[in-house]
Image (cartoon, rainbow, N blue to C red; front, side):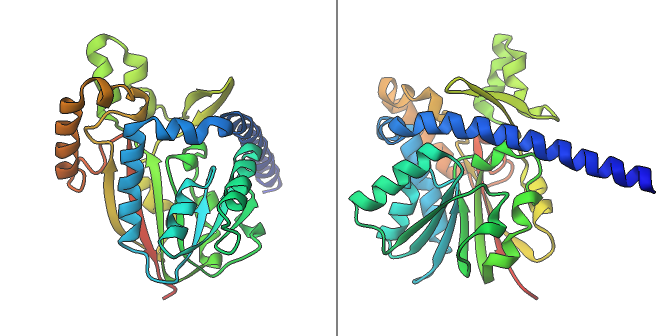
Length: 286
């Protein structure tokens, strides 16, 4: 019994150390990216279309006066949008650089009455300086940097109001645009998302592991008090944002893909076979 206890403590310490190292790399990478993050967004038609789809999804479940907790808020693009729609946001992020840019946005846009911010990891939500949220939101795969989502979701019942919603936007296990690399002989790229222990991501000179999810695995991390409301594919047929030249060089082709994407993204299996998927759940205290 004692041996098992010691082993468990050592394992927990090892996991905690690895997570800290990962988050340190993530912090450095996104801090370097923060300076030109908004400009990259403005120049990327695909990314802008995807962000619009995510916002439209979330707006279906928000009610007047709702208070939003945003995880991985970045420079505050989504936070500012939701404030413009009449909501209040508590924006959190791990990255020093992103928090600095977020602070500048709040000052320049005079948003201090509607957006509060706090630098913290999504594994430290017990340190939040506010609670009573109606909605928890995380966009574009920030949560793919952790293998076990229950390390995040375990805090939700303490900060989310009854009947509140959660929306995650996560990178999925299967992306058609990556899988077609099989036909080019690039098997490592085609199957990278299926690696059990995560795939190595490279960003701004930093290397860290990313993990890919299925809606079933996400749902399992929430527990019985959360009910699945909807799963929607994000980037089913339109190319991923790294293919940003496609809409500019082949606008008609992109328009057709976008039309078909909209028709398919709410239906199985296409709501799971996409670059990302949007998953929304509702919390009940009962």
